[in-house]
Image 1 (cartoon, rainbow, N blue to C red):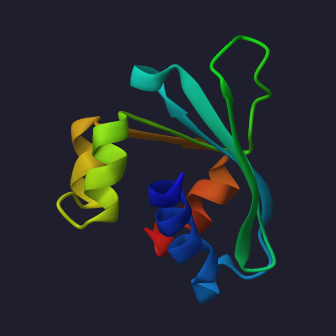
Image 2 (cartoon, rainbow, N blue to C red; image 1 turned 90 degrees about the horizontal axis):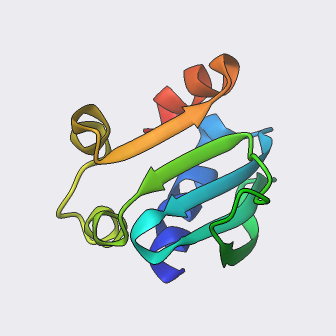
Length: 105
């Protein structure tokens, strides 16, 4: 949770994120968990983990990665761009959100 808070907090604090109000999820398949939260007002709020089941609501912005990759992103051993390009990190969102997020990532 700490690693995800660090990554998403940096994203939320970026001026390009101003005005965004979107639901977030980060699926961690190796842990069978999904972390849900909300990006709004320059901060990430209400982060909580739930079991990865079909009942998990679909967030506006969805990340999927292994927990080891999440930690590597946090401590700087892995950069988002190469991790995304190689398929280690998946990012799903609507077209408008993807265009806005590319400035952040």
